[in-house]
Amino acid sequence: MDAIGSHISEFWRVGREADPLYVPVQFQGGPSGGRFDDADREFGVVYGAPDPATCMLEKLRSTSYPAAGEPYSKEPVIDDEHLTDLEARELEIARRPRRVRPDIYECVLVHATVTTPLALLAILQTRVLETLGSHPRIARLLATASRPHLTIGDLLGAGVEIPQTATAILMREVVLGRRWEGIQVLSTHGPRTSYAIFADRLRARSATILIKRITRDDVTLQATARELGLEL
Amino acid sequence: MPASAVQDHFSVDRVFEDVRLEITQIVDPAEIVRKLAYALGRRGVARLTHTSDPSTVSRWITGRAAPHAQTLQRIREGYCVYETMRRYFGSDTAAEQWLTGASARFDYGMPLDALADSRLRDVIAAMKADIIQ
Image (tube, rainbow over all chains, first blue to last red; front, side, top):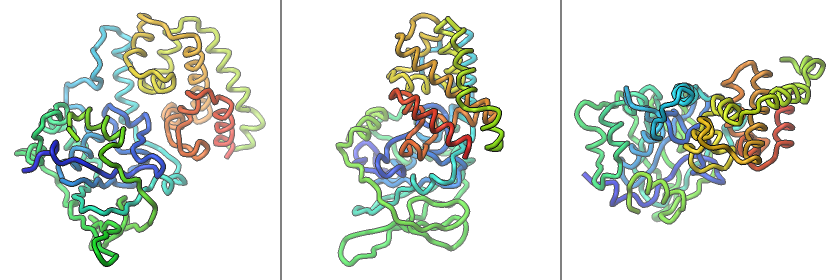
Protein backbone atom coordinates (compact mmCIF):
# COMPACT_ATOMS: atom_id res chain seq x y z
CA MET A 1 0.00 0.00 0.00
CA ASP A 2 1.28 3.43 -0.84
CA ALA A 3 2.49 5.73 1.88
CA ILE A 4 0.89 9.11 2.23
CA GLY A 5 4.15 10.84 2.86
CA SER A 6 5.54 10.15 -0.53
CA HIS A 7 2.38 10.86 -2.48
CA ILE A 8 0.55 13.82 -1.06
CA SER A 9 1.27 16.66 -3.38
CA GLU A 10 -1.99 18.45 -3.88
CA PHE A 11 -5.40 18.14 -2.54
CA TRP A 12 -8.65 19.92 -2.88
CA ARG A 13 -10.73 20.98 -0.01
CA VAL A 14 -14.19 22.33 -0.05
CA GLY A 15 -14.43 25.79 1.35
CA ARG A 16 -14.84 29.40 0.59
CA GLU A 17 -13.91 30.32 -2.92
CA ALA A 18 -11.55 33.05 -1.88
CA ASP A 19 -9.75 30.96 0.68
CA PRO A 20 -10.59 27.27 0.59
CA LEU A 21 -8.24 26.36 3.38
CA TYR A 22 -9.69 28.87 5.79
CA VAL A 23 -11.20 27.10 8.74
CA PRO A 24 -13.32 29.01 11.24
CA VAL A 25 -12.14 28.97 14.79
CA GLN A 26 -14.77 26.57 15.96
CA PHE A 27 -13.35 23.88 13.73
CA GLN A 28 -9.73 24.46 14.55
CA GLY A 29 -8.28 21.71 16.65
CA GLY A 30 -10.33 19.98 19.24
CA PRO A 31 -13.02 17.45 18.69
CA SER A 32 -15.32 19.46 16.50
CA GLY A 33 -17.38 17.80 13.85
CA GLY A 34 -17.93 18.98 10.35
CA ARG A 35 -16.14 21.52 8.28
CA PHE A 36 -16.55 25.16 7.61
CA ASP A 37 -20.11 26.28 7.88
CA ASP A 38 -21.70 22.94 7.46
CA ALA A 39 -23.92 24.11 10.23
CA ASP A 40 -26.77 21.74 10.06
CA ARG A 41 -24.67 18.94 8.63
CA GLU A 42 -26.72 19.01 5.48
CA PHE A 43 -23.69 18.58 3.31
CA GLY A 44 -21.06 15.93 3.35
CA VAL A 45 -17.63 17.07 2.31
CA VAL A 46 -15.82 15.01 -0.25
CA TYR A 47 -12.07 15.08 -0.14
CA GLY A 48 -9.91 14.58 -3.16
CA ALA A 49 -6.30 13.54 -3.15
CA PRO A 50 -3.95 11.40 -5.18
CA ASP A 51 -4.53 8.50 -2.86
CA PRO A 52 -7.40 7.43 -0.62
CA ALA A 53 -5.33 7.36 2.55
CA THR A 54 -4.81 11.09 2.27
CA CYS A 55 -8.50 11.61 1.89
CA MET A 56 -9.22 9.48 4.88
CA LEU A 57 -6.64 11.20 7.02
CA GLU A 58 -7.88 14.60 5.97
CA LYS A 59 -11.47 13.74 6.61
CA LEU A 60 -10.96 12.10 9.96
CA ARG A 61 -8.51 14.69 11.09
CA SER A 62 -11.21 17.28 10.84
CA THR A 63 -13.88 15.24 12.50
CA SER A 64 -12.16 13.02 15.01
CA TYR A 65 -13.11 12.92 18.63
CA PRO A 66 -10.69 12.09 21.40
CA ALA A 67 -10.71 8.51 22.50
CA ALA A 68 -12.28 7.82 25.83
CA GLY A 69 -10.10 9.10 28.61
CA GLU A 70 -7.94 11.24 26.41
CA PRO A 71 -7.82 14.96 27.07
CA TYR A 72 -9.38 17.35 24.61
CA SER A 73 -6.48 19.71 24.65
CA LYS A 74 -2.91 18.87 23.81
CA GLU A 75 -1.79 21.64 26.09
CA PRO A 76 -0.10 20.62 29.29
CA VAL A 77 -2.74 20.18 31.91
CA ILE A 78 -2.46 22.88 34.53
CA ASP A 79 -3.73 21.96 37.91
CA ASP A 80 -6.21 24.75 38.21
CA GLU A 81 -9.89 24.40 38.90
CA HIS A 82 -10.75 27.11 36.39
CA LEU A 83 -8.98 25.31 33.59
CA THR A 84 -10.51 22.00 34.53
CA ASP A 85 -13.95 23.53 34.23
CA LEU A 86 -12.93 25.27 31.06
CA GLU A 87 -11.80 22.09 29.37
CA ALA A 88 -15.19 20.56 29.95
CA ARG A 89 -16.82 23.68 28.65
CA GLU A 90 -14.66 23.75 25.53
CA LEU A 91 -15.55 20.17 24.83
CA GLU A 92 -19.19 21.08 25.09
CA ILE A 93 -18.73 24.04 22.75
CA ALA A 94 -16.89 21.93 20.22
CA ARG A 95 -19.60 19.30 20.17
CA ARG A 96 -22.46 21.68 19.68
CA PRO A 97 -24.30 21.28 16.42
CA ARG A 98 -23.49 24.26 14.26
CA ARG A 99 -26.14 26.69 13.21
CA VAL A 100 -25.54 28.91 10.25
CA ARG A 101 -28.12 30.69 8.24
CA PRO A 102 -28.89 28.76 5.05
CA ASP A 103 -28.42 31.89 2.96
CA ILE A 104 -24.68 31.51 3.13
CA TYR A 105 -24.52 27.90 2.07
CA GLU A 106 -24.19 28.77 -1.59
CA CYS A 107 -21.38 31.11 -0.73
CA VAL A 108 -19.25 28.43 0.85
CA LEU A 109 -19.81 25.84 -1.83
CA VAL A 110 -16.66 25.42 -3.83
CA HIS A 111 -16.75 23.15 -6.81
CA ALA A 112 -13.88 21.79 -8.78
CA THR A 113 -12.35 21.73 -12.13
CA VAL A 114 -9.65 19.16 -11.87
CA THR A 115 -6.93 18.20 -14.27
CA THR A 116 -5.53 15.25 -12.37
CA PRO A 117 -7.27 12.01 -11.51
CA LEU A 118 -8.07 12.03 -7.84
CA ALA A 119 -9.11 9.51 -5.33
CA LEU A 120 -12.13 10.86 -3.55
CA LEU A 121 -13.61 9.75 -0.34
CA ALA A 122 -17.13 10.47 0.74
CA ILE A 123 -18.23 9.57 4.20
CA LEU A 124 -21.37 11.52 4.65
CA GLN A 125 -22.77 10.30 7.88
CA THR A 126 -21.61 12.19 10.91
CA ARG A 127 -22.24 9.17 13.07
CA VAL A 128 -19.85 7.15 10.96
CA LEU A 129 -17.20 9.81 11.17
CA GLU A 130 -17.53 10.11 14.89
CA THR A 131 -17.38 6.38 15.31
CA LEU A 132 -14.29 6.16 13.17
CA GLY A 133 -12.68 9.20 14.71
CA SER A 134 -13.10 7.94 18.23
CA HIS A 135 -11.87 4.46 17.39
CA PRO A 136 -8.68 3.94 19.42
CA ARG A 137 -6.77 2.78 16.39
CA ILE A 138 -7.69 5.80 14.31
CA ALA A 139 -7.23 8.19 17.20
CA ARG A 140 -3.76 6.82 17.79
CA LEU A 141 -2.86 7.11 14.12
CA LEU A 142 -4.13 10.64 13.91
CA ALA A 143 -2.17 11.58 16.98
CA THR A 144 1.00 10.10 15.52
CA ALA A 145 0.49 10.93 11.87
CA SER A 146 4.15 11.81 11.56
CA ARG A 147 4.84 8.24 10.62
CA PRO A 148 6.36 8.26 7.16
CA HIS A 149 4.56 5.14 6.04
CA LEU A 150 1.02 5.63 7.11
CA THR A 151 -1.18 3.71 4.74
CA ILE A 152 -4.82 3.19 4.10
CA GLY A 153 -4.28 -0.22 5.61
CA ASP A 154 -3.21 1.44 8.82
CA LEU A 155 -6.30 3.52 8.82
CA LEU A 156 -8.63 0.68 8.11
CA GLY A 157 -7.11 -2.18 9.94
CA ALA A 158 -8.82 -5.02 11.67
CA GLY A 159 -11.67 -3.93 13.82
CA VAL A 160 -12.38 -0.72 11.95
CA GLU A 161 -15.32 -0.69 9.62
CA ILE A 162 -17.09 1.96 7.63
CA PRO A 163 -20.71 0.89 7.69
CA GLN A 164 -21.52 2.88 4.62
CA THR A 165 -20.78 2.41 0.96
CA ALA A 166 -19.91 5.83 -0.25
CA THR A 167 -16.55 5.76 -1.85
CA ALA A 168 -17.52 5.19 -5.44
CA ILE A 169 -16.72 8.53 -6.98
CA LEU A 170 -15.65 9.04 -10.53
CA MET A 171 -14.59 11.88 -12.70
CA ARG A 172 -16.30 12.53 -15.95
CA GLU A 173 -14.48 13.60 -19.07
CA VAL A 174 -16.53 16.36 -20.60
CA VAL A 175 -14.04 17.82 -23.03
CA LEU A 176 -12.20 15.97 -25.73
CA GLY A 177 -8.60 15.42 -24.93
CA ARG A 178 -7.18 14.98 -21.49
CA ARG A 179 -9.09 17.63 -19.67
CA TRP A 180 -11.32 16.43 -16.92
CA GLU A 181 -14.01 18.62 -15.60
CA GLY A 182 -16.49 17.97 -12.92
CA ILE A 183 -16.71 15.25 -10.42
CA GLN A 184 -19.33 12.62 -10.62
CA VAL A 185 -20.62 11.69 -7.24
CA LEU A 186 -22.45 8.46 -6.83
CA SER A 187 -25.20 9.24 -4.44
CA THR A 188 -25.58 7.08 -1.41
CA HIS A 189 -29.28 7.68 -1.44
CA GLY A 190 -30.13 6.03 -4.69
CA PRO A 191 -28.91 5.55 -8.25
CA ARG A 192 -28.48 9.27 -8.82
CA THR A 193 -25.45 11.25 -9.74
CA SER A 194 -24.42 14.83 -9.41
CA TYR A 195 -21.43 16.83 -10.42
CA ALA A 196 -20.61 18.65 -7.27
CA ILE A 197 -17.82 18.10 -4.85
CA PHE A 198 -20.34 18.76 -2.16
CA ALA A 199 -22.75 15.91 -1.75
CA ASP A 200 -26.06 16.87 -0.32
CA ARG A 201 -27.26 14.35 2.17
CA LEU A 202 -30.81 14.54 1.12
CA ARG A 203 -30.73 14.84 -2.61
CA ALA A 204 -28.41 14.84 -5.55
CA ARG A 205 -27.10 18.29 -6.25
CA SER A 206 -25.55 20.05 -9.16
CA ALA A 207 -23.86 23.38 -9.26
CA THR A 208 -20.86 25.08 -10.73
CA ILE A 209 -18.61 27.41 -8.86
CA LEU A 210 -14.86 27.58 -8.75
CA ILE A 211 -12.23 26.05 -6.58
CA LYS A 212 -8.78 27.23 -5.85
CA ARG A 213 -6.29 24.59 -6.71
CA ILE A 214 -4.03 24.03 -3.76
CA THR A 215 -0.53 23.37 -4.88
CA ARG A 216 2.48 21.91 -3.22
CA ASP A 217 3.93 25.27 -2.24
CA ASP A 218 0.77 26.61 -0.67
CA VAL A 219 1.71 28.04 2.71
CA THR A 220 -1.27 26.65 4.54
CA LEU A 221 -0.87 23.29 2.96
CA GLN A 222 2.75 23.25 3.97
CA ALA A 223 1.80 24.09 7.52
CA THR A 224 -0.83 21.39 7.53
CA ALA A 225 1.63 18.91 6.19
CA ARG A 226 4.21 19.83 8.80
CA GLU A 227 1.60 19.39 11.48
CA LEU A 228 0.88 15.96 10.11
CA GLY A 229 4.53 15.18 9.79
CA LEU A 230 4.26 14.81 6.05
CA GLU A 231 6.91 15.73 3.56
CA LEU A 232 5.67 17.49 0.47
CA MET B 1 -38.09 38.48 19.52
CA PRO B 2 -40.23 40.57 17.19
CA ALA B 3 -38.49 43.51 15.64
CA SER B 4 -40.91 45.95 17.14
CA ALA B 5 -40.27 44.63 20.61
CA VAL B 6 -36.57 44.93 20.09
CA GLN B 7 -36.87 48.47 18.89
CA ASP B 8 -39.32 49.55 21.53
CA HIS B 9 -37.96 47.99 24.64
CA PHE B 10 -34.51 46.58 24.23
CA SER B 11 -32.38 48.51 21.86
CA VAL B 12 -29.08 46.91 21.06
CA ASP B 13 -27.32 50.03 22.22
CA ARG B 14 -29.03 49.91 25.55
CA VAL B 15 -28.32 46.25 26.20
CA PHE B 16 -24.75 46.64 25.03
CA GLU B 17 -24.29 49.59 27.37
CA ASP B 18 -25.75 47.61 30.27
CA VAL B 19 -23.31 44.81 29.62
CA ARG B 20 -20.45 47.22 29.22
CA LEU B 21 -21.20 48.79 32.58
CA GLU B 22 -21.40 45.38 34.20
CA ILE B 23 -18.08 44.30 32.82
CA THR B 24 -16.56 47.56 33.93
CA GLN B 25 -17.23 46.52 37.51
CA ILE B 26 -14.90 43.57 37.09
CA VAL B 27 -11.41 44.68 37.90
CA ASP B 28 -9.63 41.35 37.84
CA PRO B 29 -8.33 40.77 34.29
CA ALA B 30 -8.26 37.03 34.89
CA GLU B 31 -11.97 37.00 35.60
CA ILE B 32 -12.77 38.88 32.41
CA VAL B 33 -10.66 36.53 30.33
CA ARG B 34 -12.24 33.58 32.10
CA LYS B 35 -15.73 34.76 31.27
CA LEU B 36 -14.96 35.12 27.60
CA ALA B 37 -13.03 31.86 27.49
CA TYR B 38 -16.02 30.16 29.02
CA ALA B 39 -18.13 31.62 26.23
CA LEU B 40 -15.85 31.03 23.25
CA GLY B 41 -13.14 28.68 24.43
CA ARG B 42 -9.49 29.60 24.77
CA ARG B 43 -8.95 29.32 21.04
CA GLY B 44 -11.64 31.87 20.48
CA VAL B 45 -10.01 34.28 22.91
CA ALA B 46 -6.65 33.65 21.30
CA ARG B 47 -8.06 34.44 17.90
CA LEU B 48 -9.74 37.60 19.13
CA THR B 49 -6.50 38.86 20.61
CA HIS B 50 -4.20 37.71 17.82
CA THR B 51 -2.49 35.44 20.30
CA SER B 52 -0.78 32.58 18.54
CA ASP B 53 -0.59 30.24 21.50
CA PRO B 54 -3.82 29.43 23.39
CA SER B 55 -1.73 28.46 26.39
CA THR B 56 -1.12 32.18 26.82
CA VAL B 57 -4.83 32.51 27.43
CA SER B 58 -4.53 29.80 30.06
CA ARG B 59 -1.90 31.85 31.82
CA TRP B 60 -4.16 34.90 31.75
CA ILE B 61 -6.96 32.85 33.24
CA THR B 62 -4.83 31.49 36.05
CA GLY B 63 -3.33 34.87 36.76
CA ARG B 64 0.18 33.74 35.90
CA ALA B 65 0.30 36.47 33.31
CA ALA B 66 -1.87 39.44 32.45
CA PRO B 67 -2.93 40.62 29.01
CA HIS B 68 -1.74 43.95 27.75
CA ALA B 69 -4.20 46.78 28.34
CA GLN B 70 -5.15 46.96 24.68
CA THR B 71 -5.62 43.21 24.57
CA LEU B 72 -7.77 43.33 27.65
CA GLN B 73 -9.89 46.01 26.03
CA ARG B 74 -10.41 43.73 23.05
CA ILE B 75 -11.48 40.97 25.40
CA ARG B 76 -13.92 43.29 27.13
CA GLU B 77 -15.41 44.23 23.78
CA GLY B 78 -15.66 40.61 22.78
CA TYR B 79 -17.47 39.75 25.95
CA CYS B 80 -19.84 42.70 25.58
CA VAL B 81 -20.80 41.58 22.09
CA TYR B 82 -21.17 37.96 23.16
CA GLU B 83 -23.27 38.81 26.19
CA THR B 84 -25.46 41.22 24.25
CA MET B 85 -26.20 38.55 21.67
CA ARG B 86 -26.73 35.97 24.36
CA ARG B 87 -29.37 38.12 26.01
CA TYR B 88 -31.16 38.71 22.75
CA PHE B 89 -30.99 35.17 21.49
CA GLY B 90 -31.56 33.66 24.91
CA SER B 91 -28.91 31.10 24.10
CA ASP B 92 -25.19 30.99 24.73
CA THR B 93 -24.84 28.60 21.81
CA ALA B 94 -26.49 31.04 19.42
CA ALA B 95 -24.35 33.90 20.68
CA GLU B 96 -21.13 31.93 20.37
CA GLN B 97 -21.99 30.70 16.92
CA TRP B 98 -22.99 34.14 15.76
CA LEU B 99 -19.55 35.42 16.72
CA THR B 100 -17.62 32.51 15.25
CA GLY B 101 -19.75 31.72 12.25
CA ALA B 102 -19.49 33.08 8.75
CA SER B 103 -21.41 36.26 8.19
CA ALA B 104 -22.41 37.78 4.91
CA ARG B 105 -21.95 41.14 6.59
CA PHE B 106 -18.25 40.48 6.87
CA ASP B 107 -17.66 38.96 3.47
CA TYR B 108 -18.33 35.55 4.97
CA GLY B 109 -15.73 36.05 7.62
CA MET B 110 -16.41 35.93 11.31
CA PRO B 111 -17.61 38.81 13.46
CA LEU B 112 -14.95 37.61 15.88
CA ASP B 113 -12.27 38.44 13.33
CA ALA B 114 -13.78 41.86 12.76
CA LEU B 115 -13.57 42.49 16.49
CA ALA B 116 -9.98 41.34 16.46
CA ASP B 117 -9.35 43.96 13.81
CA SER B 118 -10.80 46.71 16.02
CA ARG B 119 -14.05 46.92 14.08
CA LEU B 120 -16.37 47.09 17.05
CA ARG B 121 -18.67 49.57 15.34
CA ASP B 122 -19.12 47.27 12.36
CA VAL B 123 -19.88 44.37 14.64
CA ILE B 124 -22.46 46.34 16.57
CA ALA B 125 -24.07 47.35 13.28
CA ALA B 126 -24.15 43.69 12.24
CA MET B 127 -25.67 42.76 15.57
CA LYS B 128 -28.42 45.28 15.11
CA ALA B 129 -29.08 44.16 11.58
CA ASP B 130 -29.22 40.48 12.51
CA ILE B 131 -31.37 41.02 15.55
CA ILE B 132 -33.91 43.20 13.84
CA GLN B 133 -33.92 41.19 10.63
